[in-house]
Image (tube, rainbow over all chains, first blue to last red; front, top):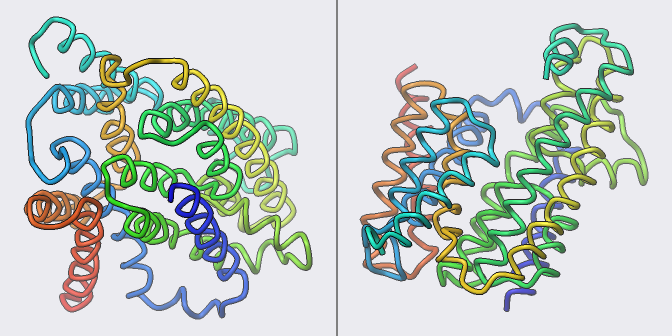
Length: 103
Length: 233
């Protein structure tokens, strides 16, 4: 099941890359194509942030992940590199759990 | 990092400065590959599955999304669809790069795999100088490919050696990774509004839809927003 997702997902993303080298360039001049392509990652990534922070299966909970996310946002405001943003979130969540302040 | 700015600032950068930029971007992405490997294993993939994604899929946001949806119990179909939707932008990069790179035969097949945010961004800053643009594309693409894969291996093996990812806060690293990918895209009021609406739609639908589907539904927000902003012009 995981292997199927890995292989099928990879095949599709490769085809997306390759197809771009064959399509007519005039597609890029269509404003609608550019707008959708620009906004799609924004909507999907924001949805992933929300779901990965609050969801456990189909229920919404507030736990140490929220504190981790807020710490990550502070790190981003301070222009920290990607690895630091991720580490800060993990450390904050782990410390809160170890201290018994969050689940 | 100073090299990076110099190289991107001038149209006819020297080969050396192009390669230095490529290496610095590769090193930064390698560190990010480290977190991908660790998060993939924390989400339930084996180290080999994580590595296969970095070798075969090789586009960060799609890889994070695939493991994120699988880890949340969203199932393979939703995971694959989310990865594809996020990967669609690479097709647009390829469209912009095609006339500059002029790739044929096997070079086109290899070049396609290296078409990602970083290689497209560096190549497209040198559009007025085709030789430099091609050098930037290959140098950055290969540097990121190698270091992203080394980072993935280190992160996956490191996380595989741990007992419970939650005690180390690795589950909190997942949304942090996504917010770091989202951050540079929040450039104006439209993108910020789409982000808030996408997050809201996903949360509202979480109790009623299977895991994975709320994220896909949030993609509709982008379509509606693109249509609305098109009409208002």
